[in-house]
Image 1 (cartoon, one colour):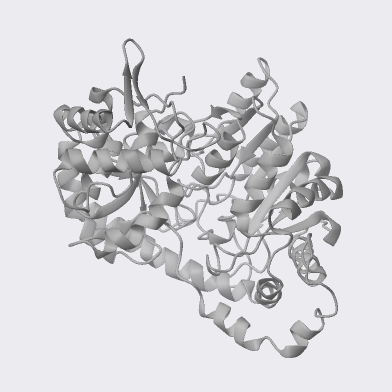
Image 2 (cartoon, rainbow, N blue to C red):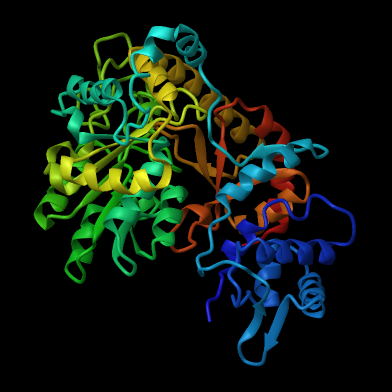
Length: 513
């Protein structure tokens, strides 16, 4: 029988305890019944023990006992001696359980509406005005030029594919339009890769922690996820370890390796030049297929790869290389004119995929991402994509073509905004939570914070009951690690973080790890 970990179940229960009438056991029972009814948890799934679930939810064991009792009396739970409590009533056809990432989007408006509510569940940024300007600049002629056909472009409209190829060529990475597949954001791109290149049971190497959307896509495909590296003081500031991959390959050959070398999600770290070269060496020697996700790479803050400002803290330059291996001075007054260079640019095209997007930099509502790979891999991915959505919106793609010309301007604006907001968030935590720990991110919209002595799964559940939505570190781990970490977004400013901090501190004291 399938079992669901308490950490995953807790993430599916987003918002359950902060709303609705009645006592806590009734609300918990109702939330579990809803998961079963809509198929988010497969029929026959064995739930965690009462003690284990109580610990991760930050409630008393008697609350969980009462909730399980209510479910059992209503026919939604079956207790089997020696096997635990099995949930019933699900109509789902498979046994995969998501991480609740999309559930958190549904719950955000309810959390924000609650008394004293603060939403720290998403790092997505507000849109840039350039998006509205690009939409307004579209003319009838732009659309009219494409109205002569049926509007279905499975690979993407030619102008956008060529524009993305030019984006890489300008960075010194030879690329042709035939190597580009336009997708509905980077999330679809990662999902397509999982569908096309991974079979159930295949070993896939991932960083630990890593992007939770990728974990969901790979788990849903039935991949066996194997983490490399870590996130402790001994890791040299890197989010993964190429030496660990070399050791792993002595025992098993992975189907593919999924990496985020630049502006890593969730840590915000970027590999320095030496680390990138070591990864390239190991990947090339072992002839491994690599998926490099550069979704957040355009949110690099221009710092040195260890997260510092390019100075050694004493007013002098530290001489560290850029994260992409180029010199730290771009010669343009701080505005990069070219795309970040992918780590896989030095590897065979047929053994690599680069995932990119405009949605992180410009606006999440603009669903335009892409895959860069060999024409053969692109054709394979396009075949699967066509079966799902036929093609991406032509209008969105026309907007994207115009936005590609505004990349330098957008980078400069985002960099200035995020640097200021990062600094403000760090100042807030240094004053309000001086015992919390983090490494200054070199990119991205969030801090990856360690809360010593605290189980952040329980903290997150306690916080939700006070109207604060926050994501614990285990959501980003393939092995439910980092239960002393929180991801704290600052991309919208620090108002929400300032409002939530007293609640988070109070809950941290109660959620002892």
